[in-house]
Length: 184
Image 1 (spheres, one colour):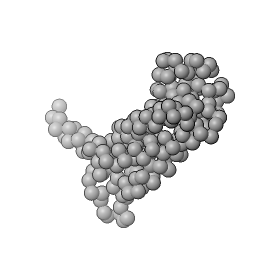
Image 2 (cartoon, helix red, strand yellow; image 1 turned 180 degrees about the vertical axis):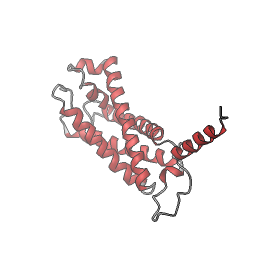
Image 3 (cartoon, helix red, strand yellow; image 1 turned 90 degrees about the vertical axis):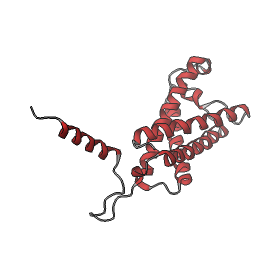
Image 4 (cartoon, one colour; image 1 turned 60 degrees about the horizontal axis):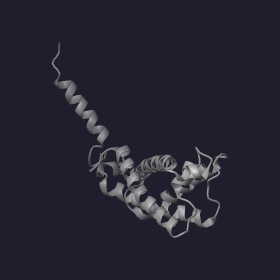
């Protein structure tokens, strides 16, 4: 069980992105989408289509794609920490679409990005793959996350959480270590 929200978010976001990339590639092969999300992301830094499709452009776009997905995973974990692990599919779909819409809008808004998709089918494909990304990331986070990450806030001031969070455990360890040091 992972007790750190950031690490859990990175794992969940990267796992979700693997599935999203597989769906994106299938969409390209079936000619539903004009270009991969990596290609669109690479268009932020390079202006020629030939540069977005070569190995360096694909790596560049892939790094941006995986980085944004990892950060999205952290956001999904934060949401689940605040609202609980129930309704993971609904929360994942909404988060995935919101993250995908934001990233697609951001990537497409750069004036130098001439590689952005302009057709509805490509953008719908992006949104569908991002919805699946959100579901996978939320499910992984809910499954791998330690229960203490999802403890609800007490309804009153005298009911403590069921377990310590990883931050509270670290504080206790530091106190114990400092108490074990002999005085000089």
